[in-house]
Amino acid sequence: MSAAANKQILQNVFAEMAEGNTARFRDCLSDDISWSFKGSTKWTMTYRGKQAVLRELLGPIFAQFANQYTSTAERFVADEDLVVVETRGNVMTKSGRAYCNKYCYVCRMRDGKIIELTEYMDTALADAVLADPVTMNHATEPA
Image (tube, rainbow, N blue to C red; front, side, top):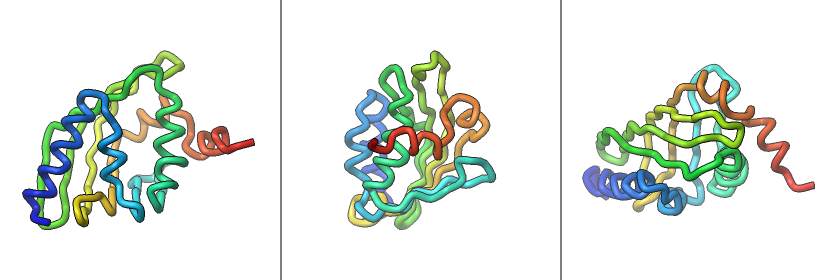
């Protein structure tokens, strides 16, 4: 697919996310996605495979939210199979804290799906407001 087509796909996905519809984003993840966090914090890790992303990352994070999560994209830049998305998330946690993080997603696309996502975010905010990702995964594992 062209850079313009890839960019349009993600513009459509994030238009839905701005309205609180996260299903289209999940649908856009390839089965073999690799999702990596950069930095030097407890968030620095890579999730491999759509099921791992949903079960070990998105599920436990979204379980902490008290209301509908939204993500409003501010900029899209596309080049070949890469689309960079700058966006702002907005949600309240069940602990009563605002979690309004800023993100930069570098997405590698294949056949209309995200196959690699490298995420840059305010890790200090995530550390302060969200449960530790390792703790989240153990807390949400079946008994």
